[in-house]
Amino acid sequence: MTTVQLPLTPAEKLFRECLLDCRTQMESVPGMKDLVLRWTGGWVRDKLLGVQSHDIDVALSTMTGWEFGQALQTFIKEHGAKYEEQARKQGFNSQLKDIHKIEANPDKSKHLETITTRMFGIDVDFVNLRKEVYNRQNRHPQVEFGTAEEDALRRDATVNALFYNLDTQEVEDFTHRGLEDMKDKIIRTPLAPYQTFKDDPLRVLRLIRFACRLQYEIEPSAKEAMKDTTIHEALRLKISRERVGVEIGKIMAGPDPYTGLKYVNEFDLYFTVFADPATPPIDDSVDAGHAIIAYDGLQRILDEKSSICLSLRPREDQTLSWFLAAYTPWCKSSANAYQASREGIKATNSMSKVLRDAIDMRPAILDGVQSANDEKAIRGDVGMTLRRCKEAWRSHVLFSLLCDLVEQDFATVTDRYQNFLAYIHYQKLEDAYAVTPILKGNEIREALGNPKVGPWLGKAVDELARWQFDHPQGAKEEAIDMMMGKRSELGLS
Image 1 (cartoon, helix red, strand yellow):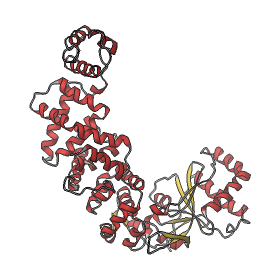
Image 2 (spheres, one colour):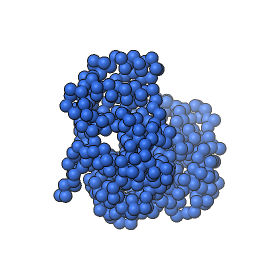
Image 3 (cartoon, one colour):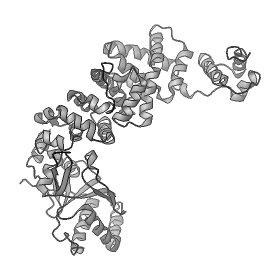
């Protein structure tokens, strides 16, 4: 077996020393004396890539995470002060937290109880090496103690199945492909892809995420298995939507959301991922192909259209920008879009609200784009549109632009929106949503004869805002005169 050694940070060295000392001092605990401690998965992969990770999974050969965690907690109570002092002297986080148990949830393909803690600034999970024996009826595995090789073969990708042995201080590659796949930049499942995904369908999204994060190519047989409709159905029904949303969120926030989201469509996973699993679309009103057009358009904007990027700032909230692109197929119904995003990927309420409002505001935005290009734009109309959009106006305009790409070519659409954005900039309307009313509420009432507060007041505030947009240099006295002339329009005469 090929062996590789890894350089450890001072915190990692002290953590390793603490774990090995615990094993020595607590050897009377059942399973402790013969225990082999390994760091696993992502930490090993990232170390080999020269990327520092602050999360370490600890695999235990002869004990459960809970058993070792309790022994470690006892050890820390007796000897922790020594390690805390060493950490302080070396200048890194000396805090040692108590252990915490996260229960397994087999119904949602979370088959392992996990024990977590934080030591020396490192987030730590403890879990025993395991193998999974599957029940043919419900596909829920019975988790049993396993060998390091069995544990490695049950993981999602060979590059995530590498171990670091704390005794030998060497990397162990029990799949015999992990180190080679890292060298060749390949994402491959340790076992047959179909079985790997059937065991845990979320691995389909995880492999997409890792391929994008690492800039690796997904191995061809894995790609084919990722297209299997039985895998899609298992992903739709078996995996919690929160876990689906976490993976999609990481893809959108990662270094290459474009490739990741294109993969989702390439593997026919669009509705499996983004639709409400209880009520997926049943007609052609939602076309997954529109998402591809939006992805292509957003990537071209990021690559080629610096002026639009300067105005709409899609990089400042990258996740939201790609989220909006993903939901362009729902542009005909704000209610359906909101429902799909909330139930499909468990998007936050604020993100789903931006999407819903973007669809509701699109007719007004399209009017603004048209008037700007016809050179007939009125400052008050555009200002009121942006005011209704509030702080999210840039996201609303971006969404409208991406939707337009379905029916018009990229150059035409981006030119039209550039003209609209140029008008907004020239008229200094970027902060239209935050314009302070020149008159306070009591001053508006006084100008109108002090009527009782009612629905008219909101209309009056809108009239005042529109007037201010059309008269940016207007004085308060002029605003009062304007309001006095609006009594009948407000239903107060």
